Image 1 (cartoon, rainbow, N blue to C red):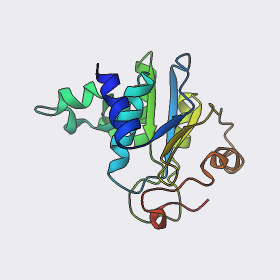
Image 2 (cartoon, rainbow, N blue to C red):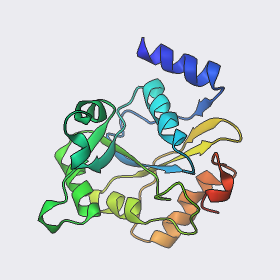
Image 3 (cartoon, rainbow, N blue to C red):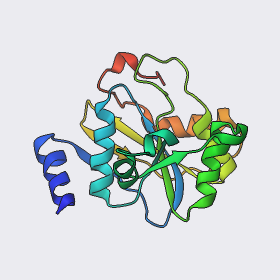
Image 4 (cartoon, one colour):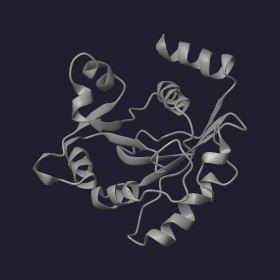
Length: 183
């Protein structure tokens, strides 16, 4: 029932489409979502997740997962991030990957909805340390489509891997293209 509602809103009312999918056999991955220029991107992600029907996750500081919102955030795929003990964010997220059988983490490497000239690299090092592929996901407001790419195994050579990964985002425009990272 919920899936049909999501499809009606996403496809019919909003006019978006989804190109590609996340293979259920890929149990762990980093979903690299770009461009990220507005708050509505979160809802595009929720609709896509509900329509595709594959568990997708995100992380947030553990304080977000307490009463009254904790149940809701967990129900939509959220995982609390515990950085106690002096852990950096990358290592804390790798711990989440290691503690779960299924964890497909969506992350926006632009890190903000404001204008950016550089991507944050944490998503890459999370994938490398957790030994999981990166799946590029483009939110293209110009074409009103979510484009999901194939899993890409990272090698440890950030510059070379990014040349391959960023190809997926060419021609994708965020809601506010002037804010997005320029490929």
